[in-house]
Image 1 (cartoon, rainbow, N blue to C red):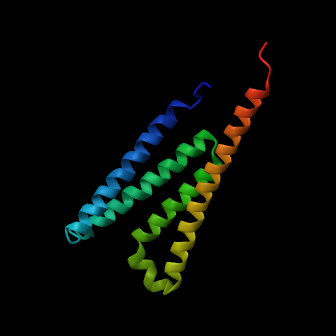
Image 2 (cartoon, one colour):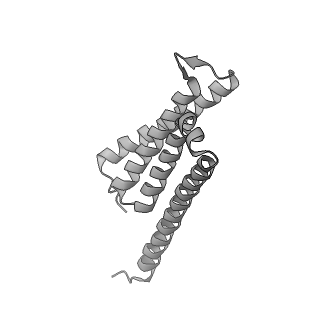
Length: 137
């Protein structure tokens, strides 16, 4: 099977992975360093922004590839990280509903990504079984 990805998808997947890895390193580093700040912003907030960017870029990648469920799921995960970025603002406004909203968005995003992966696996199985049943002439 020939890889039919547009060239733009390659850049999106590389940028997405890079942003997520850098975000993880920044968040873990900030946590182990006792939450240092960069100006008025905590360093962990910069890591959270990298997560938002990484998941948004991943959503774009899956959108270009035609994987709608994964694209929407990763967009939900980006939204969840964006909620965590502004938790200092939303948590007091929404009281206990903030945590419920955050969990709901994370659960929805994760479920959509998993459902998309399962759907892709089923399509691959169908393609393989069709090729095995097709007589070669």
